[in-house]
Length: 160
Image (cartoon, rainbow, N blue to C red; front, top):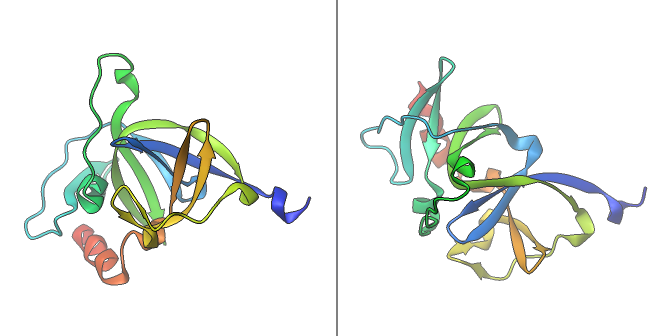
């Protein structure tokens, strides 16, 4: 198979008005909204921690991190609303709050384009690429760049 036909899968979700995706290989699981306990002196974008089967998971609010508005909640389709995606970043589990889970999609590597300079307030340093989907686009996040090493260490230290 030719390189340009290589595919990878993304777990897609909505934050505000935009559709985002993360590599399925970085996703541990998706869980419904849990009771999150705030942490004193945590970075502004850390919502707190929650207990997932006796494991303490720090929760990141990407709305705060990227200064995004939350999605308007509608009555229909409530079963898909809200929740956390549990990411595995270099062996550390971190939850990110999402407005709505979308679906798993396969993307051809050749369809991934470089992102424009600024997309909805998110700097390109957090974006791996952009893919056209129907009448819109899907922003592929680079989860390893969401936090610099100091921030990641602070988040990981919350567990300890």
